[in-house]
Image (cartoon, rainbow, N blue to C red; front, top):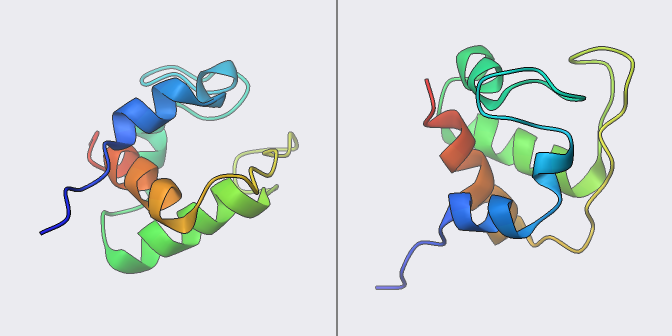
Length: 87
């Protein structure tokens, strides 16, 4: 079996913390607020992983989330799984 990627380690190694904190709004929403809005399921993992890679705007206000095209679907999914586990 392939070891699952460590979403927390991937987040810490990227620029996510520039805009997000675990339990307080920074530029973007707190990860706990994201976890409370999106239940942990395969559909939400896919939707949010795509937002990490392609960027997004409008779900949490006017400030757009920057696209991260250099992050793979596998890594983005692991990051989302970690975030959505914070409920």
